[in-house]
Image (cartoon, rainbow, N blue to C red; front, top):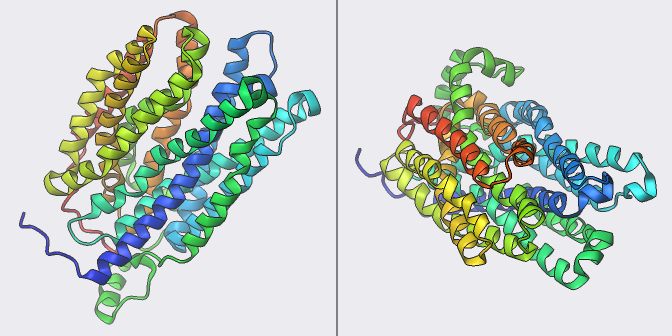
Length: 444
């Protein structure tokens, strides 16, 4: 395929501004989610689910963490319908506002000691609202960036908001680590855990301002006369669905299932590394909390460094080769990565996590363009969101629960590697069954 011509300056500037705005939003959303995940690993179990058994308390906290993933499909249906019928930007502003309200609410909650059973009920309710918000966030953010992207650079621009999950985790660590060090473990457990949640107020205000100033996707902007004719013809062949999720399930079930499978393994790697291991390492292996947070943070930074180059490569050679390389790498590296925890050595753990999260970036970066390219324009928000969010729910949301159960029967961290490697192998097989999408044109 011949190289794409360089896009004009104004088009590049507009696309870059949209991609940056999408990144701001996903960073804030994943900051909120990462803060909750880290707090689940550190303090929320005893604060909201007191128990004489530490494993039971941790399971209850992680079950609440998983509750948000269960609510994500509702967010897909709600925001997918808004995004595919009324516009991407409206859906993204609404999802960010909902996430902000829920996260700030967690920071203001009374604990079990103060409010009794009302405390965990309110916590689960706010987690469900967070989950609904996340169900509409990722698909809309990467889609808005992808639909504004210049020719030949769709994977690159779509991958920019995909930096948000790792950047959000780094931002949460940058708040939690100093708070933990200043307040001490007892102070953090008693009251200081609320600070990262409440600081979300500033981020949400900034994010809402940024998102309300960007332009709508070309799919929803007034077309030229020639574009209008082409759009009318396309819509006559495939009119907008009143319920996009239902249309997606009935007309594209195979691609939806394979898309879920393609993102499944990466979700497990991400959430076991930045959520579960932060609890497992200190509680079961005696690894200092700061060591685990630092290892995960350095690994996340390594993943960020790989994200954009991997996307640029996906624009040149195709999405599947890059993602297949990442999936195969994760299959091979999963066991050594989690086996590094047995060493209890900060350098070994940090190195293993960094390699693992860089391999994850090879899978995670191109998927931002790959999943939207699997579906037509009027189902694209719903289709990309459903595939990614359901993969996150099955491979990520329940991963800490599954891992906690596995480690209650087999004490070695090797079991985490086998579990994760198996899911990455499934992703590898699904990618082999899906077509290359680099040359797919976004119809409007």
